[in-house]
Amino acid sequence: MNKHLEELIELSKIDQSIDSFEPKVKQAKTKLEQIENQESDVAKEIESLQEEIKDAELKKAKNDLHIQELTAKLDANKKKSAEAKTEKEIKALQLEEEIAREQLDFANEEIERLDKLIDTRKAEIEAKHSELEELKEQSAQIKEDVEKELVEIEKQKQELFEKKQKLVSKMSQKILAFYDKIRRWAKNSAVVPVRKQACMGCYMKINDKTYAEVIKGEEITTCPHCGRILYLEPQKEEANAE
Ligand SMILES: [Zn+2]
Image 1 (tube, helix red, strand yellow):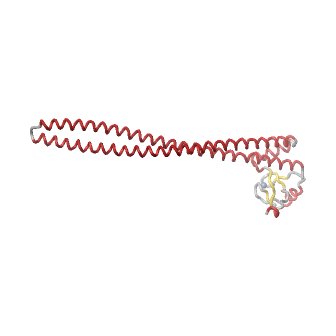
Image 2 (image 1 turned 90 degrees about the vertical axis):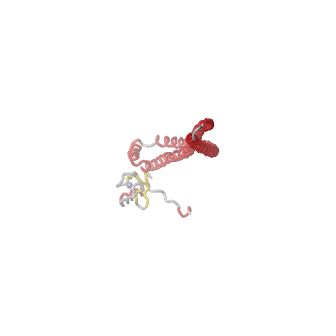
């Protein structure tokens, strides 16, 4: 096979490997992001539960105040009743008392309800706190794993860069420029194999003349349809792989 073509095939494989790290890096980072998002969601839930408690405490305080006022009113009413002279006066005071007692009952019920609510929310917060602790442990582990993975990827990438550098340094500038020009639009499929007489870049069938050239491998042949560099893969012993 043409030496330039051999080099191009190797170069394109190195470039493919280098680029294949990108999704891996992204995936690793996404994993970390997901758990961090979960953490912040739980933290927000805790915050909103705490807000609810604060709100309930405020309402309780208002009801307490109201109870104090009503109690004072009932006391005053008692005194007035003792001094009341007419039946009309007495009836009016009785009515006032009734209303005040109803309000008192309502305020007490409300406080009871709020106490229950506060207890429930407190239990919920406790559960959320344990959930958060667990998530934090998980995310610390994931962070460690991801960092290790990224270091490993960086190492492998570096090795590939060095390999590429070595290869490129002995390649013809003209061939490299040609490759780069195709790579600009074809990305990782600048150099593609031919299978069943079809270009594996654009999947179109190539004519017999081009195919014969590809089989010979004496020159750098490009696909007549898309312009990618073509080569014939060495025959794999597929039977053995089965
Ligand atoms: Zn093609």
